[in-house]
Image (cartoon, rainbow, N blue to C red; front, side, top):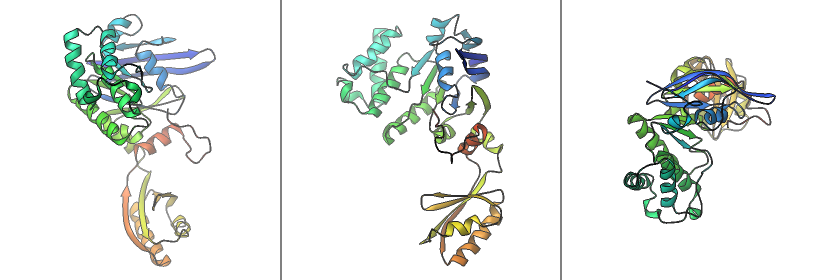
Length: 318
């Protein structure tokens, strides 16, 4: 069954067209990633799909329910976790969760049982009577996620769920997403973290200037730009001048310094590997590690959005 269906969706704000007739479908039980630069149309799309903002034209449905004409029925099927934590600092974690449950008309017995289970799942039960004002950003985000799940939604919208969080909160949230996926819950995820989309999502849509640039699984998207391959090498006690030697190697299109390593962009990794060894011998340095890599989802994103990472003031992914 199709969980989310979008057809020729257009959204205009006076003279600005945020969405230019986008169309896509999300299968039930799928984790679907939505990536794009700032201003690409991600937030606008989520606001329409969750019934917050009406489209200018086109249609969108949630489990077959039209989001404009059957807004209340569609909203009963979804949970929403916004980028900014929508919790009340002066209330306890428990009262925030119960208030959210009441908004979804969850019965008393169910909300108390489910609320306790969710707070235990997110490692917050021991603090359930504490005011949220004293919680860290990660704890607030985990509470927000629990609030988004209190009505046992069939579709969960996550807007940048792990942005700026500590490692523990990141790991907990990613594990919860995987668990939801195995239980058949559809997850619609926007994220700053391209690698997060790579390891979490079944499919990814890349949106740019209000248009869908590509939709596919991360691995199939990577195969569309096989020319973006690389060799990553680390040297023992290499002088900075080694970079000039690497730049002059045949078939090396670009050299990037990444920490204590150098990444050489090339279409012919085997040839470059041999040339690197010759460069090292010439410079009288020792190669301590060398690996080859195919294109990453980040490479796909940069290629499809024409993003120039070397330009000052470059747009970040929102």
